[in-house]
Image 1 (spheres, one colour):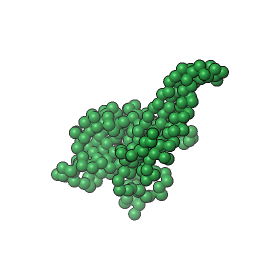
Image 2 (spheres, rainbow, N blue to C red; image 1 turned 90 degrees about the vertical axis):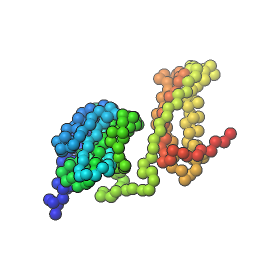
Image 3 (tube, rainbow, N blue to C red; image 1 turned 120 degrees about the horizontal axis):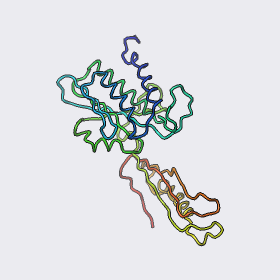
Image 4 (tube, rainbow, N blue to C red; image 1 turned 180 degrees about the vertical axis):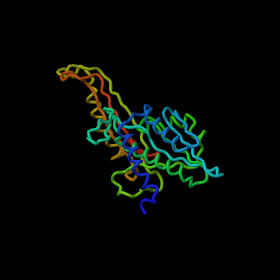
Length: 271
């Protein structure tokens, strides 16, 4: 029966936690209020230990039961994105220019729900570490926690995490052997040269022309230099240069990102 299902009974509270976190989003390494909210909940659940400030704003809750020494980690993320929310939802972001647009509010709420249920049932023998990571969005929050002694202080034999995926049917969990999600590596390129008047471009170097050639060439990395069976995406996401209509600038700046499932992808270089 529904009323005997502890998950169903807890779901409205988990949704409320998610709405609260969604309404109060914070960027990477600034998730102070979010971290405080989580720590307060874990203590209210009766956790054995609650550690704050790991890797900046990370939180780790420790739950022990029985005589077992085996330990696992369950992980979620705290940070939001620098995105303006225009959803009009009653629980929309109250922080202009910051939004939980990647689902970390849901991940954190679900992990809090798991923490609540396991703290009540104690239906395990060993140790569970509930790890709330800061700055997942390109800021290296996991590395910061590791450098701060995460696995030395809380050694685990396995880590588990989930990520929402709107295209997956409701009630379905998708998994695969090997890499589950792509790794990321961001890059920046600056082209510098001698600026000139637009009517006399021969007197300058025209970094815009060089940047344009680079943009075209980058598209060939995946389409013509990588084995088609290798999973690789290279995308340029920003380009900035100049601020006057009749002046060729002396500098153009680009930013991009790579997504890949293997740290070693052979690229064929031809002269």
